[in-house]
Length: 201
Image (cartoon, rainbow, N blue to C red; front, side):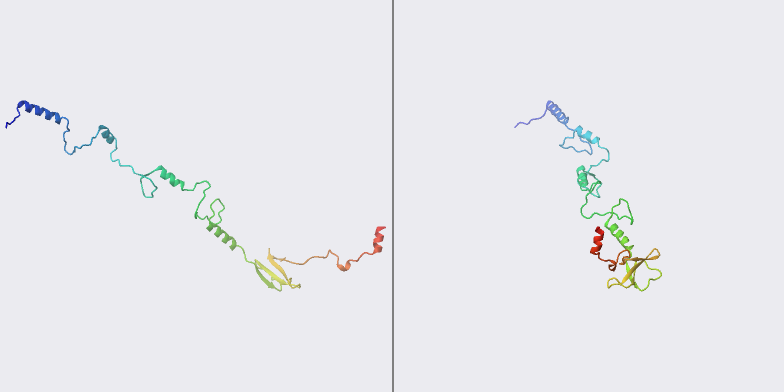
């Protein structure tokens, strides 16, 4: 069996082919790794346009009280849709409002607490009427007190009612009727026929 060898011509041919093959490769540099992925100039320019220290922007899809991320417009719009409008709002449930100061007379909302306090204050200022039965009227009377002074009358009318007003006694509720301008039954006499005949002459 014969053995082959490479002569000078063949060796020069081989070296030429090796150079051609190496010309299509990238020279390896320290710290860099060659992969099968193509990294184009377009991608490099895109990366070069990103500022140093830039981070990925995360956008939340719902409102969050602790998140510092951006929020989607539709999430904000949905949240606003759940709020009452400023003009003529309609509330549900049990809405609450600050209680205005007592005596307020402006356009502040009157809460149930404000109304309750106002009624209690108004009622507290009303005196409860009391009654006292006396045989004679005292020199002066007490406020919100009706004095019942005995008198001669029927079973249901045996008292005169007095009240102390403007530093003097005022008789109230009297049933007395002044009939001094009226005729008594004994003073009325029936006409006679003779009197009627005389009037018709």
